[in-house]
Amino acid sequence: MTDERAHAFTDDALGAHDAVALAALVRAGEVNPRELVAAAVARAGRIDGALLPVAHASYERPRISREGIGGPLWGVPTYLKDNVDLRGLPTAMGSEAFRARPARRNARFTDQFLATGLAVLGKTRLPEFGLNASTEFAAAQPVRNPWKPSHSAGASSGGSAALVAAGVVPIAHANDGGGSIRIPAACCGLIGLKPTRGRLVTNAQGGKLPIDLVTDGVVTRSVRDTAAFFAAAERHHHNPKLPPLGLVEGPGRRPLRIGLVVDSPIAKTDEPTRRAVEETAARLEAMGHRVEPTTLPFGEEFSRDFLSYWGYIAWVIAVTGRLVLDPSFRSGRLDGLTTGLRRRFQTEFPRTPGVLRRLRRAEAVYAGIFRDHDAILSPVLAHTAPPIGHLSPNVAFDELVERLLRYVAFTPVNNVTGGPGIALPTGAAPGGLPIGVHLSAAHGQERLLLELAFALEADRPWRRIQD
Image (cartoon, rainbow, N blue to C red):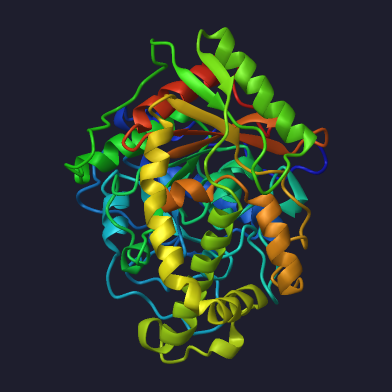
């Protein structure tokens, strides 16, 4: 371990095991869930002051469900992100604009999450309403990256990613409305699968939007943990409109046609990220896949439309907050990014019908990509995780938006179109920060993405922060 890294791995009940291994130990009677919880709580105490990933703790009363007892991930400790309701804990959504009160009931996704057998120890921090790509705040301290605490852990699932990367728990909840599973996974050296829209139960916030951008999932340190979670979640709920996923256990066997995208139409990729993507392409070719350069049909107009829709979300939050969130809500307390997005939307309001029309059409355009390709390989982000402050909500709004567009140049396509995408930690920058690559596939093809992920993991195991 270098002096900069901050992790909690030690010789305790958790060890360096992933969730699948821990659940197997519980089933074999070699460890009990109480020991795992105690170890995770102790680990959280060791890194919380340095990384600040936890929003609300429930260490004396871990949350489990009757349905989850004996489930595939029974007894494994975890956390929920603080934008999903968990009965008895507040849902603050990273905002100081209202006083969050304890939720009266679980969100539907929370029930699905608990049905896997996981034991929830608390909730993780996110930037205000998940709108930023770094877990930073106007007044509070940020969540920091375990690999390099002077840098961003990504967002909006930054708290979850920091906990998993630092070894507090092997798996944690994340959700994704513009890249928020995949971005923190890339920043923190984790696996993050954004599933096809509808694969899991509908997210409470996303389901109310004209175009549902939001899907739930997890961040993990092993591909098999991600595969095990989705298989377990499917036991609770399967969408009959999508092909069953089942448990994916290893690489696929057939050669694939993979399109290679290195630069976005709106941002040039930095050299370390470009190198990580090209090296991954070479590895896939060595496995027998055909990798060929291609371009994606989503350019500057798509980015502008997505930004307008992001502004619409901020506007809805501002005008409905007292009714939907809490009577204590005050829009004047919103941070600079949320306020700026709201004001931008108000000036662009006449564009809204066209924005919605074009964004809805993007799903068919996305589907057309996979007539010629089985998967698309690209960066997750156009550059490596930035230092804390680069994406602070206190940066002047116009400059902050430009920085976000130059950074988050690849992931929003999958949110608008509903297609699946996975971030994999195949690279590293010269200073040690992880770099993630991104694989996309046709709707319903999570199995293909997981098989590719298994192949890359077997070919060259991911770096470990504790080494």
